[in-house]
Structures are given as structure tokens and as C-alpha cells.
Length: 286
Image 1 (cartoon, rainbow, N blue to C red):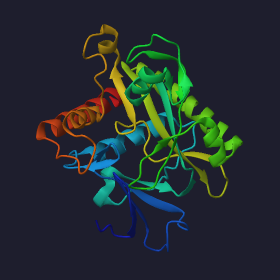
Image 2 (tube, helix red, strand yellow):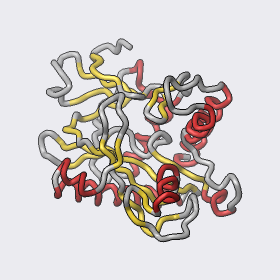
Image 3 (cartoon, rainbow, N blue to C red):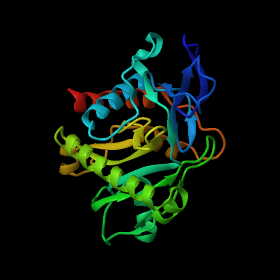
């Protein structure tokens, strides 16, 4: 996409990065334009087709969460995005990014539940016996992952491996800040009848001050798992229905062996996913 005044420099699975056309490269540019596309990814693959309106919905939700979490430094700059992408883009400070995805789990679900059934652990952390799928954990867990280059699989790592990657002080700061944000966000979600089951954060360092800064998207349907609190409390087969792309993951798991090119998503799955994204932002922000 051509955006006047900006030059495309990178595309990830679901987002595209631009720098001012007056800057030579991303490393030296003080700001960048973060554009959220309608692309959807699962199991480290970009899928077809995209989810209509997804980029705008997730951008609006990230902006809302940045406002709610104003006590934590973030990369958002007070500059309007270009009109052509205004609804799905943010002008942000360029940071020295840290190669760690900061995953926080408040409930036993997803890959954590699969591992727990096999070994009684989540990312190598021992948990009490007798837990069921979807149970609340005794305390939120910080379970970092190494953020792999595009096209490679992210890898769960231990806290000790995080220390090896970024140093002891930064590892502790990442852990403590991630848990603090998660607890704050969980309380906000609960006040709106929602459960924040788990999420992932990304951080970088301010290039001038060195301060740890929350970046990328935050607490969106792509990076988080939300449940309806009333449905969860009632129990039953729909207890863990989520407001995210779990619909996509479940369909893929039932229709693809995770080898080769993923199948095209059916229209019904695309529509259901878009509806859940819209419902979440409505529940949180209205």
C-alpha cells in the first residue's frame, strides 16, 4: 500500500511497518507507522481469507487499553495517522525491541492445558494436581517465549533462558511489569463481566532514556484470550467460549494436520470470528 509521506519497510504476519519518507531506515527513524491489516494468523501461518474490519477493531482496542493503562509507559505518539489508514494505524515511537514475548497466564487453557495433562506443568512450572481445563491458576504465571524471526516458530523459554537473552535485571523488569499490567487489565475486564485468561505483551527500550516501554498491540483479541464471566461461572460445554480467534484455531485443528499450506477458512468461520471481535470491543469499551 502506498501511504503519502511514509515508506514501507517491513511486513509481519498481520502488521505492516512504515517510516517517514524523510528517514533512511528503521534503525535510525525516531518514529514509525504501525498498520494493522485484516490478515489473520494461527499456528505461525498467515491464513486466507482475512477477517473483514479486523485491523480497525484491534487498533481501536489497543488505543483504548493504552488509555486505561496510562501508568505504564507505551510507544504511542500523539500524532494522527494518515487519513488513508487512520482507523487501523498508530504512529509510534521506534524502540530497541527485546526478543521476548511476555506471556502471562491467569487460567489453565490452550497449550498450557495440553502440557499440564502430560506433565503437570505449564512451560516447565509445576502446578498443583487435579486442575481442570479452564481452571484459575493459584497465581498468574509469567511464561516467556523467544520471539522467532518471521517464518519460524516462537519458542517457549524458561525465566533462566530469558536472563541469558536479556540479562537478569531486564528479565525481572519484564516479568514484574507484565504481571502488574495483567493484574490491572484483569480487574478492568472483570468489571465488565469478562475474564482475561491469558495474554502476551511485547516491550522495547526507549532509545533515548532506556526506559522499558510497552509496544505493539496490547490486550487485543489476537494477543489475548477472553471469556464471558457469567458463562464461565455457569459451567457447561460453552464455559470457555472465547472472544478471539480460537474459533479459527479450533476449525484448523479439526481440518488440518499442520503440515503444508493451511486450508482456506470457510465463510462461516470468518463471519463468526469477526462477530466475536466486535462483541469484545463493545463489551469492554461501551
